[in-house]
Image 1: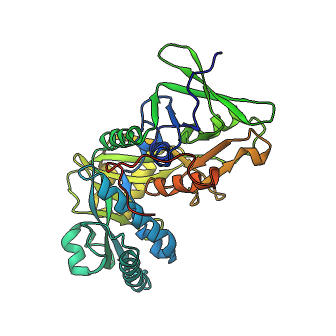
Image 2 (image 1 turned 180 degrees about the vertical axis):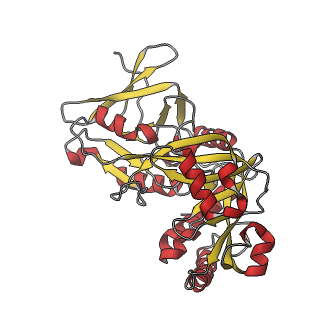
Length: 389
């Protein structure tokens, strides 16, 4: 097939938030970037996510302050750059009778979160500081917890996505304004290599015309989300099995008891419930869908909400990388250089574990692929004005 006339420094496969942030960051550095999406932008794992831009405060339980601070910085970036599309969400972690150490750990983490954010100069706008709640204040927020042995709670604020499709549209516009070419309806099928083993072109199919396409480039970055492993195998058939997809799904429930905040409920593995316009969202659950079991688990964690009788509006499902422990999501991002594994030189696969830190991971990918910095001067733009890393 004849190649397209224009050559690109990189072709990115996958138009979710990870691919979009990578296209934007690369274009801002002066790279000629082509982003290809098989369906609609943001229509895969991004659309199925829980819709929370986590600030990382949950890492206080492991005192992982590096990840906490990184997440807070990226959360603040969303608030500054996508006002109206994201908004603060109050979150509450009840302390049950057995959680005797957690109030102290929460207080320490809250202090370090405030100190670290202030020192880094990235304090998120309009987010109140984390604080402890006594039992009475907790029950004012959640009277349905009155029959459970709660002693108080930790309260912090995360950020929720108000309109996911509009956020994706804004990110597509941002990538294009930076200089990236973004095309949907193009299915990436593999790569063509030269004699030296380096990629010469990305091979794809235009779903509208049915015509095959070949896009000249020395670099392809696979950010295909749920299709990550399949595309990696197509481009590098003998490559390592680096990504085991784990189904991750959330319930959208109609419920007659409006929530005043999002709550992490349960004494064992916590489940997250947050208010929505129609009722509440609950999750995240992993593995094969078992809605009755999920409702039973929610009901056991918060019997006062009577969630076992809630009506399920819909289920949103995507995939995340599975950890070594089965039915547990991985907690570390993946950047695989296939050329170092005997595959095509210039082929990379990227899997992020958090929507929040997609931009941070994109910068890490760029530093890995182009360690020498920009290939040509980037064009300045006030629209793309950004806080320092």
